Image (cartoon, rainbow, N blue to C red):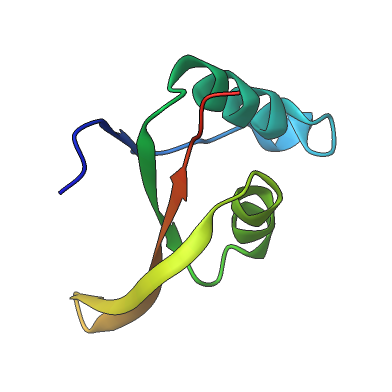
Length: 86
């Protein structure tokens, strides 16, 4: 396991702020704060805007998995980024 690791639990923005780049600014803040870290984030595969945000920020898919809750199954992707020091 890498020495410096950070996890993104959730990035949630209110629908009224859609297309105002609020999530992009939050992701930029996280990436600036955790330079030199491996950053991991789990994303629901149906959340295409979040996957695109992560990819735009340099995250790559690591693995996918399924989660079953109350007879409903969702697919997730674990993404990670080596946040190199610039």
